[in-house]
Length: 415
Image (cartoon, rainbow, N blue to C red; front, side, top):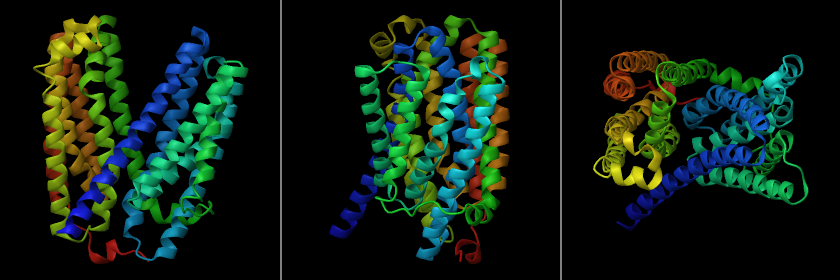
């Protein structure tokens, strides 16, 4: 009984550390942009937003190419020496892709100019940021989220100290904000060996070993991001600015907060599924426990529906007229959460083609639902159209994940 309680406490601690890491990572990104909006003139903030967005999108692409395959592949490697070697090689891959990306950003900033001029301020720091992020994913693949949290905490702390230094004795600019962000990233890289990772080695080993996943996972990330931007484009073209702002306020109230927990659960579940991929009972148990957790989170989210007027009046008083949107957006949030265990299952079982197929169906449904809803009923139609698409997406993801065969033993154990 005591051992079972200790295991349960350990699992709870890992979940809390994973959620804390996601909160810290997302919060740091948000505060970076918020501080820029406060200290820079409107033109300068506009340049910052463009440059930071480009860097963020590139980082997300490399995370899909290097980081996410780590979660699915590294837990299947049984030999500890090889596992450590692959981890170091993955850091090397992130470093090489970071240098290549930095060179491209420098060239674009110098040649294209205009709003992209300030890419040159971020470019030198990109390799460090990508290596630090890859290190986080190595720790998640090892089911040690507390170490990933330590990486992000180091980054955030050093960045905060740098920002304080600028406020006290420096000059606010896009370059100084980029430098504070970059110095934090370098500090995060410096702490990786302290936390037990080897220094980056040649990328070829990891790129060769992960190629059966990296391309597919990158396609999933690109398709998923395109879904977001297409819906935003449709909303921008067909909604008034007031309606678009009201919808965004409601999303911040009932959709954005649980997304942090969903992201953390995906990071924790994928290596768990990968590690036990050949054990049908363990895979089903992980799925059931995760569904129960997401259903419990969904009940909390749904509680916002009867409280919608109070919550909007408290947090977004200028958008109380959009209280009706809380109902479809809350339901959409619950449906999105319930897809996470199936998403993690497909990743952990290393069925990337099935994952891409499911993502394509999901994206098509969301875009079609959003467009049809917008045309029929404006912002209310958009919200309900995306909710309907979310229900379809849940069914598709569940069917695909449950039908995906478990790996054969030789697929699980890697030399």
